[in-house]
Image (tube, rainbow, N blue to C red; front, side):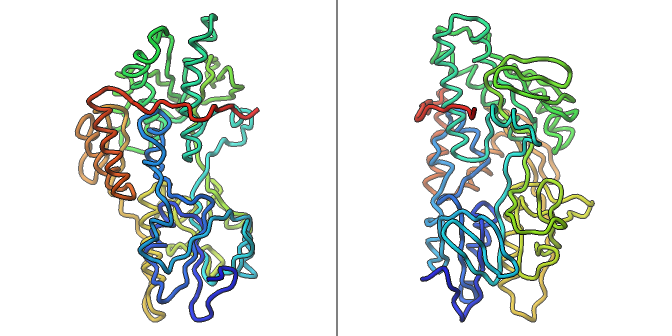
Length: 424
């Protein structure tokens, strides 16, 4: 089928981005009514909540990635093309991409989010972030390279710098990475690097707000802090990172931390595509939509997932979470599948709860009518994330890895597949 010209008998729905939101709508659109084309710059779906485990040697990358063509295999009418979208031309109803002009009748943008360094280019060039499988592999290689270099160093200060870690941002990702690093220090690195004095290794978690996990309940925030401290993690709240030059992290309280490894999880922003008027671009580079995910001022362009700035009812947009993206994708597909005389449903987010894992048998969870901590929260986290993974093989592989890691106190996947060098 020629993707550069539309089927005259069906309206074309062009979906840009195949994350949680893009997959949900792509799988549910009625292909008897629509010609569906999905475009993404990767040929796989990434299960981002488990990227930190790839970065710290707990899982292989193919455990958290799943081929998009496999996902859409049961809907053979759905077309997928590997391409990068460059800009939109709403006046002509076309998208400019790396493979040419893609026409559409209905455009759905589900391009998600990207790391936000708030304009600090120096920090961006020298720090590590975690938004993709590539980022996770880079982080894994860099961590291991630092320990290999520390083995060879005769300078105590350089050793300490190579073994120190600063994690900025104490949201779920920051907390999970800090906890995973502490688990490595306690259970894995003493066996791999017996010549190193791991007392030199320090993990500092820096958070600009007054508490860790400030998007969760006070109960979860308080108990998350307790569990992090039990792992030996130093927590600094109410303090910002001012700058980082690859050697020294300068904090807002004047403290200077010597470290070669700064992991940035302090912010994300919408991954907007050029082509919109400035009026619809909201703080965080997100696109303003109505309650039906329709972009304000457009009749045939919709935005779902992290990129959508839809009022949640309190004057603020919905949080940038996978459940929001999935629910928006499902509802928009359902609305588009309706006949012309049927009324569309407005989006209402059903919050099933929020959770974060901190390490072995350590987690916190805010469920609908219940707050959990410790082992039971951890088991709940494992079960839910296992069920959300795409594909039976991925679920089985992840489960086997988790069981092995739990009973062996080991993480076998400590490979430097490709040496990583920071951006200059």
